[in-house]
Length: 168
Image 1 (cartoon, helix red, strand yellow):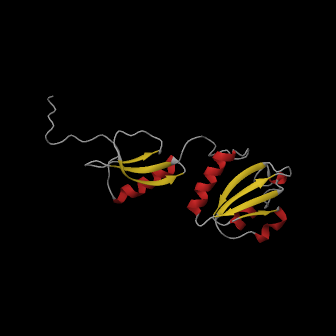
Image 2: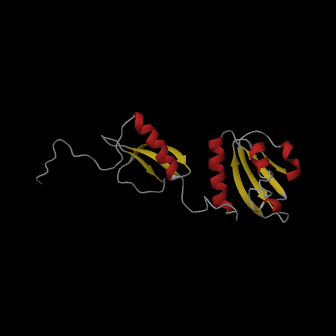
Image 3: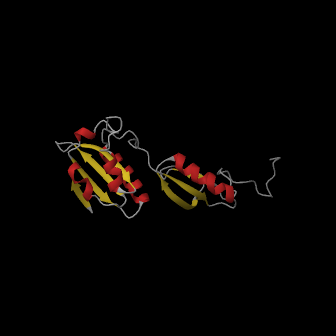
């Protein structure tokens, strides 16, 4: 569900996860953001600290639009897709043309776990993919945590078979 609000209607915002769009008086899109709790996150923009708003464009906001999501992950992915699509001037991150990264497990005798982009060409096929992750850093952090419990290799090179002779 998508709903329009004005800054005066902040108290009516839902406490659900989702994304929000800020527009100026001419209808120009200024910013897209995500929230675990839309009411708390959007309202935080109007809480002045040291006499100033947290973002320079807040005085220009005339209308805000929200889109609720079922989960924070959906909000994260939707936010990134919308930023790629609309390129708002006040979003500094996620404006490149890269795709999300995924974690892939190769289909080999000794599978490798790799961080990759879906558009990437691989030398070996994948057995399974997990993700998407909005950044490579987040995918690598997830793998560091998992690796503490389950050791795995991270290269795609097929290991030498016991019948392979290195003498050529």
